[in-house]
Image 1 (cartoon, protein in one colour):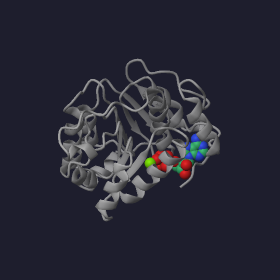
Image 2 (image 1 turned 180 degrees about the vertical axis):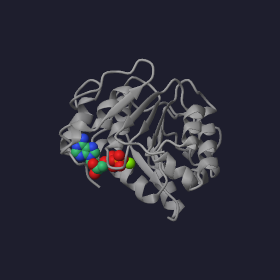
Image 3 (image 1 turned 135 degrees about the vertical axis):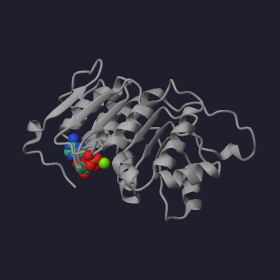
Length: 252
Ligand code: ADP
Ligand code: MG
């Protein structure tokens, strides 16, 4: 995967909704944190992609987002950069008092990214590691078809940002290893593929778990290559007063 920077600035972007912020033209503070900008430089990202130009200020503003953009357009940075910048500022959120000896080892991530496959969550996790370098934020990854006990040990070492497939996250929730009570950022990446793979019931369960403690506080970002009816339904069910972003040609 790579970005074609040739016709880069000709890619049409449409942003609709109330109070759409001006797009950024460079990676800069604000809205991005100096430490995040250092890590962006280390990764040799010299300028934001079209989806990043728009999504970074939208997410930094605290808005929900429905973004339609093709694979390879740079969506990962589009959500990770503003989420990490704000997380660096916020610092770790207080973990609720443990109620039993079992919940003592439960992790309380503040950011959750769901994606459909092991390959995709691994890619997002690799980016998360790069861009959290020298920060307090500890990313963790969880996917099926791999030793769950090894993943649980990793989670117990620290789990501020969790990148997971819906099925494996539900297993971890059932085992009481994760609480979604502190989730401030919920990202559904490649949402159309997740629905094609039959993950809708798991996703709805996960969103319910995020909703239980405090709906007000959560920001939800939905990314999809296409915008068919079932994705439109998810957007209207999960997002509040969202901004709609469409980058390049979008199929349905
Ligand atoms: P998508 O999720 O839209 O498919 P990715 O976020 O995976 O796209 O980005 C595709 C590739 O482009 C990745 O290898 C990523 O590291 C790289 N990339 C993303 N944004 C930039 C940027 N601003 N400058 C240079 N490379 C970038
Ligand atoms: Mg992606």
